[in-house]
Image 1 (cartoon, rainbow, N blue to C red):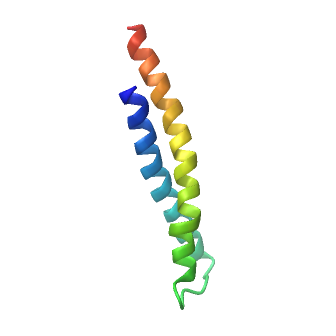
Image 2: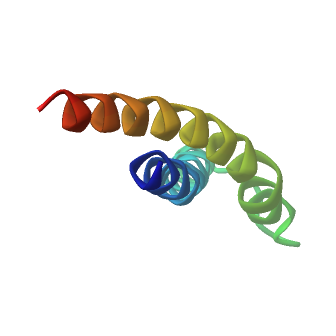
Image 3: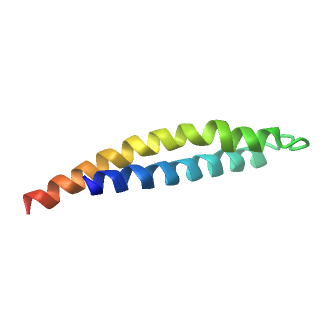
Length: 73
């Protein structure tokens, strides 16, 4: 159970950070206007949590596999 929880927590954190960084990088490459900071706030507070949810699901699946393999040993 702890391995699944660890996978979910790490998935949320890493998914949020990776998604936000990818969107901000895309915005810089596409030369999106940063005058008011709206794009950066949208990337971090709107799109980042979506990546966190996907990361939590993926982390839970990986954690479950990790726990299942540990029990099989």
